[in-house]
Image (cartoon, rainbow, N blue to C red; front, side, top):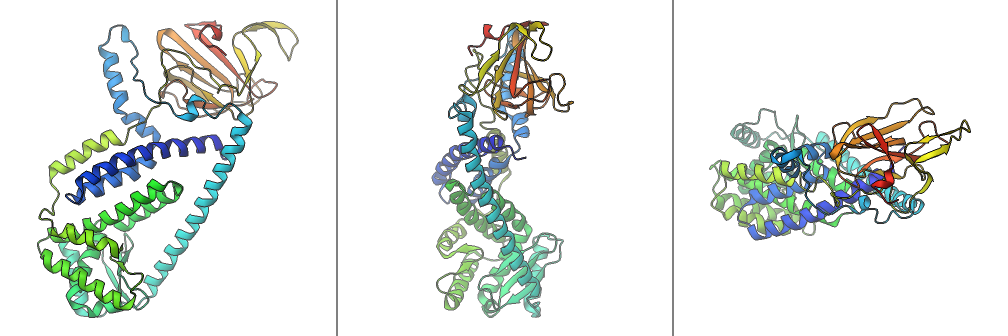
Length: 466
């Protein structure tokens, strides 16, 4: 069963973080203008990687966490140190005042998103299959001059895979497909453009060297997942243009074709293509409007990438990828374990009548009745010491989580329908850790919540206002 809350939370938080990162990269690349295609390509690639970067790795690589751990080591008494940062709407309880309304809203949004993803995926794989079949059915190039040219650039770029070359009258722009068995499909008209053929072949071989077909596939799948996000489409356009410029730079870095000859080859090919299909011309995977940027890039003197650039990119990646990895609230206070307004207290701390036996016993926690699936939140910063998912349903505490906090306090969350954290994971106040359920000895969906000071159970209301 699809967890609508989790999907909605992931989409919302990733989209918000992506928008912030988009604005930063947009400003950075605008400042760079066309001075460095390397930085344009690298920064926009980081944008897409960040959208789908695994949260577990993000957490492990968090720079903020590293500084916190270092400060905790040097401070007396092994105190906990936290940095204040904005919280996500879902964690802070905004929009969660009515659980039933949230479920209907998230259900509708998630259903629309899922339908859009399925439609776009089906369209993409259909188009991919059509082009693959077209490439497979197109006749092989027989001209020795073309084959020798492909073999020359394959050797120049040190590509070990054999490159097949096809020719087609149904396409008006060359394209490349495949990673392990790459194929270049040339338009029939391109074979007659002798002045530009060398530039075309070199550029397509550069795509194969860079494994761009694989990169484009990954980029497209991310676009589909975030099809609702305008920033993703703008970033994709910029990354596509930068990718073409990167291939141009790789060709010119070989010092085999002069910048003037290579640029003239592009212009010659554009004129040839314009005479065939003037309204919708794709030039080496880019639109006609992108040709000017490519020509400007070709005019740049520096076409190689230094180790200093790579080192700087690595440092930026270390900062960017784990950015916004953790959400924080006011860590000096405890927060409620369920979103405000989504629960009612069904049993308090102290003596109570057991609903199963009818006998009085000591209730060493507090029960919060809520609809099944209501998000359970960490009440304070700490480390998960227990996260039990495999239980015998209907007996005991059911699925439960234990979090160790500072000053010897621990919090315990039982009767969960689902556990969303793992042992060893660090959490902050308001982090989603599980979902309300009735997985143990229970009369209905609720959260049984406890706080322990050492081995002693204490009234949670001592720390939390419910």
